[in-house]
Amino acid sequence: MDQAGDLNQEVLVLNSDYAPLNVCNLKRAISLVFRGKVDVLHYDHRLIRTLKGTVDAPSVVRLKQHIRRPMPELRLSRRSIFARDNYTCQYCGQKSKELTIDHVIPKRMGGPSTWENLVCCCRKCNTKKGDKTLQQVGFELKRQPRRPKYVPFIGMTKLAGNSRNGAWRDYLPIFDDPEPLEHEGEN
Image (cartoon, rainbow, N blue to C red):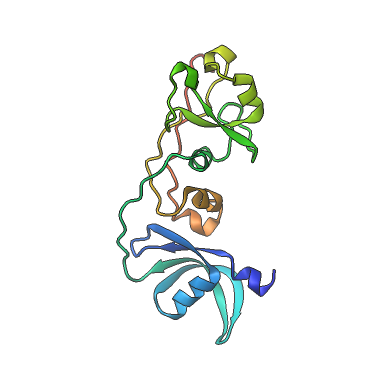
């Protein structure tokens, strides 16, 4: 990867209390390091050339001064439902980028557009379910849908996409994992 591409790499920015605060690019993170605004908690094991020589590329930085921010409101949106459900169909368990949103209780039966009634659904399952109930088509939910308890300052989709980054994972309490449903009669 070339130097310019490296500078667009994402770096996790934590508040002084280690709460995830933002994601910035590598160029901004290095600037914050040189200005003494942050401590580097994790490096990316790559060297970046600068005017002052070479520096290790940071992956996670923590602000030295605490930033007070009001708790953001977690908005219900397609993207936040996809992130909550980890881009996985809640009926068949298939991971895909070609997903839709489904009302567990269909709208025509009074099903609301709420965290507890909306789930990720693949096109095949959505077509099969249509506007029927789970019982009518014999579907079972993989996990009970609910509003996430954790409200991140960073966009949910950014957090979900980077939750596989080993250095970031320790600092990203994206959501408490939705509880799997217990199905009667299972062995």
